[in-house]
Image 1 (spheres, helix red, strand yellow):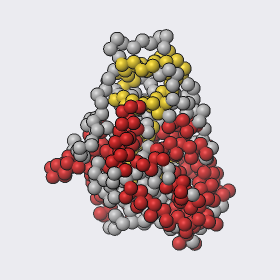
Image 2 (spheres, rainbow, N blue to C red):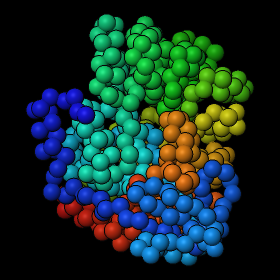
Image 3 (cartoon, rainbow, N blue to C red):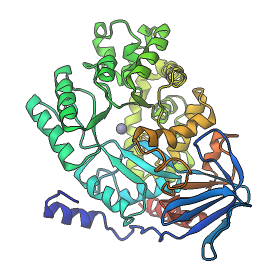
Image 4 (cartoon, rainbow, N blue to C red):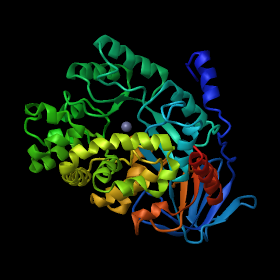
Length: 460
Ligand SMILES: [Zn+2]
């Protein structure tokens, strides 16, 4: 049910229904036979298996010899290719129509780029009233895209002034039906505490950044459910960050690098584990900053950049010009982040796959595959990296068995891969087809949609 006023509903019907909107194909009863199934419920692989999909759900899974497709099932012979659950983008920015530098239809393009790359769940980190309606339209398969879980508009030093007003906004966002609250930088400790209290009363969780005045320890104690970008961790490794106020307010604390005590990593990781918070590291965001310092040409010439509207690409590159000022420490900063991520993972902290797409040169979907590679570079096994995008998000949302794994009864979010992602995590790119809650998108369909987006952007 929409709680939006009629004028807003009319406006969003107009905005979300441009000529290019793609309707998903109807759900068909299907069977994948002779598949190598990565159920993600354990590290094993099921060779020579059949997966039967009925009414958008996994109906049955078993060895080829034991399970036969029905006469009217659409049968896909996987020929030994790998079938795995769809991936989550746990730090997504769903564009709002008519945002700066965006061509018409950009929201639908981003949704398509995600699904074309196997992303079947998006956690929207910068909510907008329009996203509530979009979430419902995606659920009803009126628009093709991932399942959407969305925050409300963010709480930041800019959006919050009076404490009472912040409390009211928390209650209003819970009432409007947002899934969680987004915390951005700049909140004072007093504002943050008031938001935490109001959120508990309204039974809504909060997630996102760690404001400098709040600090990691307070946010973990308050039950913030995710720390995104590993924000606040550099500060937590410095004895007295308040003694370096400018450095503490620098880009994710990069200015604090000379004061970092690496020996504190183990205790900070243990404290995180005890809090139950999950991490969405978004390493690609930081790798893009490193690339801007070390190899701007590689960054500007990436093959997937054809899926960025040119004006938006220029705007992102302009923001990366600041990176030059950090040139001396950025490589060391990246190395420390990898060390932290590895330590958090080894301590048992849930790691969730998020790339901050489409922000700052993170091309939707394509960036998720880069993020998986960054996790493996930080010491996660390919299986652990895949968990971060499949079973870990499902567990995080309390939806284990509903999606994120190939088990009977789960919604059929699937990726068919030519090559084995456990042998090389880069093989998550070898996509032959994607199923979005029972809607099968084969390679020809995905190629046609990608070409349509690419050609429109090339003509801008
Ligand atoms: Zn973000």
